Length: 173
Image (cartoon, rainbow, N blue to C red; front, side):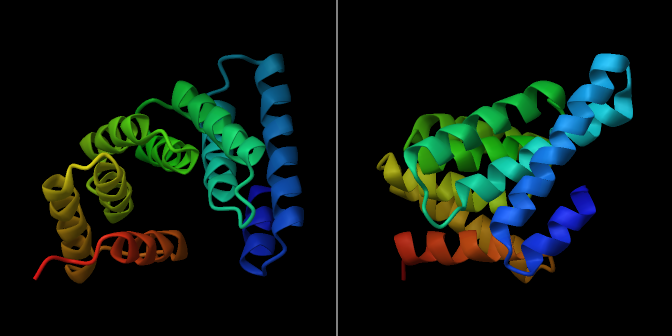
């Protein structure tokens, strides 16, 4: 269901993709109720919640309840997989979308301790900018752009974060 959800999401069928991922989450929760020590189910559950949190945080409508749900899903994913940088990235993004710049920065900083990824630097740059910490914001923007120029793979979500961050804070001359 997860793979099908990704395929459907790539086709722009967002509601259907969300539904498929929600169904995958329900199945993983059931699997864990049957066998609580099932590590694969726990890992997949964290991944599914993390992805759904990112999709919700990036939803076009960005309604308050959608963003609040994104925060809850991301928190659950971090609880399930505290060493997974993707879960912390989802939490940072969800907090950023909710307007909690401090929590977004804390989550992005933690994600960066697990993996040096451009997406986390973009989120941290935007959060720092919103907090008025402009030098730190510019530093993280530069680091993110440097990672991309050095061949760090960039997916559509990271590309969107790049566009958002560079629009929010044009690079200093």
